[in-house]
Image (cartoon, rainbow, N blue to C red):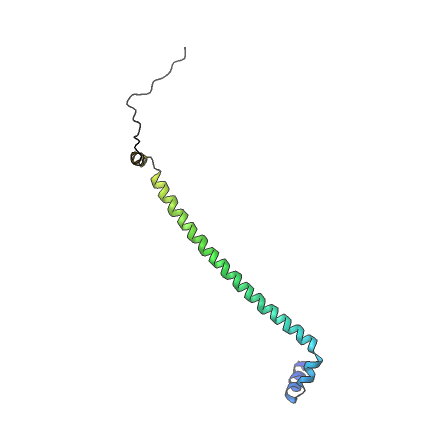
Length: 105
């Protein structure tokens, strides 16, 4: 606490330049630390924005996947297959006879 009071007294009395010259290494160190702190905050903000964009894209692709999966499951039901085959000129094979048992003699 006494140091803070001495620093304020020196700044108010006009001896601030002597204080700055005397402690220039420490003040340079504090300045470098402040720059690193600010830079780290900017890098974090940029990475956070990238992360959010990727999450949005992931969610978009996830919903698109579920929509396509739903459409595919509707198309691939057995009841829809004859309709799809008729479009290509194929017909469903209809068995009129009962299957026969083979006998081993």
